[in-house]
Image (cartoon, rainbow, N blue to C red):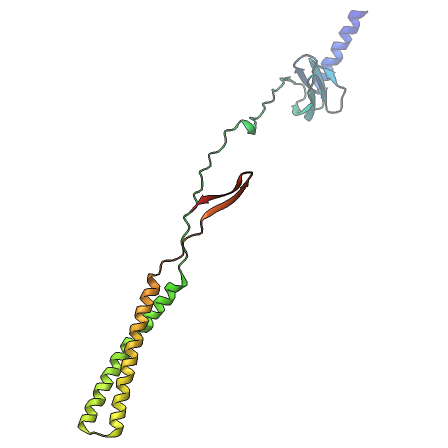
Amino acid sequence: MLAQQQSNAKERVFALEKAFGTLQVSGPEKTKVQLDSLTEVGVPARLHASPGAHVLSIRFPDSPVEKRDVALEVGRVTTLELTKQVAVTPPSKETAPPLAVAPIEKPPEKSPVPITRYIGFAAIGAGVVAGVSTLILGLSALDAGKAYDASPSIEALHHANALATWTNVAWVTGAVLVAGGVALVLIPGPKAAPNAALTVRPGGITLEGTF
């Protein structure tokens, strides 16, 4: 009787595999698989389904469920051997060597240009202009003197004396401006403020820093 039942079961499986596709699954012990929404079974397993694309759910021991796409063909057996993939832990960021950072050098501080230097250059320029005016006035005074000698008159005398006076004033003004401007330019600029700090200690107050 038992032999007859086994024979009938084999005939039904043979007929089933002729009309459907077959998936033969093997893998680690205690692994379970489920084809689409069919019953979950342990491996090794021989699963049957209609031809076409299907989804196989795989449950390895102590692991989350994995899903794989499989394609079955009518009357053919598709073999699938499952292997559990070992997760590779990425290297910790803490183990990475620190990046070398080049120190940033602070550029040296430039001493501010004193305003007296700008005033000095302006004074020298004004003195040069006054010198040019002295030359022009001097030539005019010389011409006025020649005109007075050629035709003496009170008006010519006053004109010649006025030009001579303005020539002297322009010369003195130019000389003073040039001398004063040179002096202002040569005045040394202020030094950078010292890097100092007051420290209060039990024994007293200490002034520290570079000067």
